[in-house]
Length: 249
Length: 322
Figure 1 (tube, chains in turn orange, green):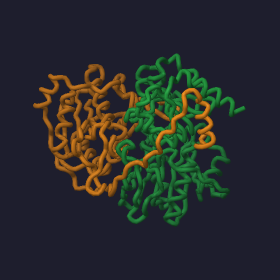
Figure 2 (tube, chains in turn purple, red; figure 1 turned 30 degrees about the vertical axis):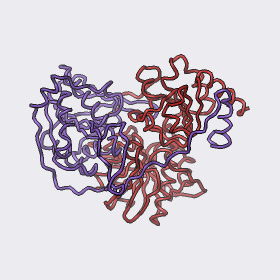
Figure 3 (cartoon, chains in turn brown, orange; figure 1 turned 180 degrees about the vertical axis):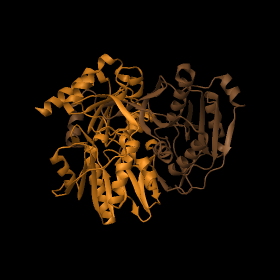
Figure 4 (spheres, chains in turn cyan, orange; figure 1 turned 90 degrees about the vertical axis):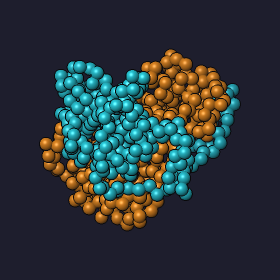
């Protein structure tokens, strides 16, 4: 079995977001770029499956749509343990564009399981995984918190409102994963970092696809009013404020 | 032309988000000078269907089909895309929850429709069609132009108020044929907690963090939640430690919620936690550390020992509920 893990390159999640060019883009000065947290967990789970000889997983490839500037992110994925990488050499303009590129890669290379994080922490689009599956005409299972392979059969758990479901599906399929898929992201060891330097990164030129969406402006969230402090000796006052001022209870 | 909205139900009733979706769709339809068609898949009570009309649906398409009992993303997307073509929908509105995130992108490819995900306001403009959406996990909002003929919007939960006025919508019971070859997933086991308030649906959420010190300290917090009709939640360290079930974890990698009231007890308010709760209408912080960042996000705060404060809040709520 071959696994493809889709990775996105995002600002470190503690970054203070600033805008540039008249609020039409993000000021990238000083931003530390990391693998999208959910994609890092996806990669970790894929590698855990590969480590387990009974799973039948033979290789883990990562794919990324981005320019040469995201090369460090790809190397990091290789250092963590991916066997090889594919970079589609293009600016990732929107989910439609990215998904179409990755679907094309998947058509050429034939994977059994494609894993995507449920969203990226930058555009919060939650769309790429589902779009890839529809471009390929294969099943997708979303909000997956556990992915196992039992006797050659993929078994997933997905989160639903108020509970969870165990879902069976035949490969090939797209798993769109969330928290729980792996406990902690795997960290690159020194040996991995050394090995990553010589692992293959295949460069592919993008298909000519028109994005369907475009961000024209960013704005900051509306600032909240300053906190009103209530004396710790008189918490009943809080209940009064919630009832009569905020009117939420 | 029409605005199509996909509603969701749970145990025979519509989820609150369904009424929000229809109210929102009705607002979009007014901007476009058109009508709203709501789609419901699965068995729901008749008076519930009527309520969709009160929220602004002109027409309700009600589908009951054995092949659509569990969510198969591919089959659902196929059914909704067929209806959307038949209804000549130019805007499709779906929730930005797990189900919506599963269906919307597949629908997007079927209809070549751009997706605006996590919108929390009515479109800013209809020409070009511009929506207001959450980005950078709530640290920024974007004005997103959708250029395709058909647009798909996924609405952030609890971001749009219900608008209900008596209205008679037409209800069409539709038999759809589902292409069996599209149903490639099967559900083997379901674990559902019945009768519990859904965290993502709750108006009030009471949440505990590491400052609660031990899982043994939770009963007063749960009692407060029960009295307020609230759902319980927790921060990531708490679910990682196994003090509370991981379904309760709210934050960037956990559940993203937007209740009217979020009470954070013993939660310091790391960026990742705030990413999951920052859209709450009111945030209350109770923490012994006066410098905890949660106070920056809160409208009401109490600096002090949660173990002493919570029981007093419980008594105060009992007092007003008398």
